[in-house]
Picture: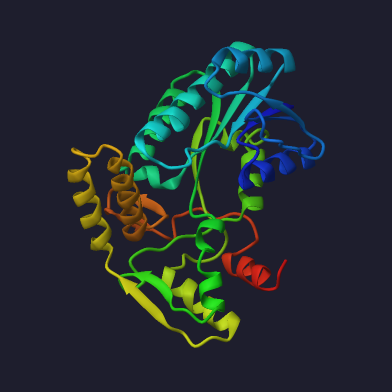
Length: 304
């Protein structure tokens, strides 16, 4: 198929392009003007995702057969989220339908199961629009990414304590690598079992807590385990104070949302949520791929 990939400049987007090419698809990547994006075996077209007419013209001229959207707001604050997670995706969907594309694959997020944040509501609004559009679709909701769980490697290597919220066992996840997630996104085009479905997905192996992530890093680096605990309620308190101050200083509303985002990830697991039992279901969270987070840690520590 001829596949249009939006968000190809990101790590997941570029991995998705590679997976599509490996599967024999022809790929056109959409990039912001001046991004300088270059991907082997891929045509890159510069476009503003806010320009619905330009998107339609590209998809019509390229005779696009499928679209994979890997775009996401950079900040998660309301204005950015609704402009990107919702409206830019709506523009992609309208262009795809107008150009006669057959399939729309959306990279969403598993955290939309329990929405409390602006970007989650924006993602859900587009998911709803996509599912009722009449277009064949696949909505992929991955758990945590390796990149988001690798920020403390340098701290541990330098002998600093690993930062935890609470005791480090409040949450858990089944992290998935860019390559394994990309393979899932690409497979949606050819696997009927993934059509017109919402697909929660995690990486291989059991769910792991932040404390287990830290313990693994200490073992790999030969460092003495040392942890520093931060009360998650502190983030919520900061969010409330900033929210009040934002009434007088509007720019503080963005910082209040950042604090709310931090509190959400400090207290909610990135696993399938069972609404009947009212709890996260580690065993029920689907797994895929072969690379684990600890494989990734070892590779980073080895300089690969």
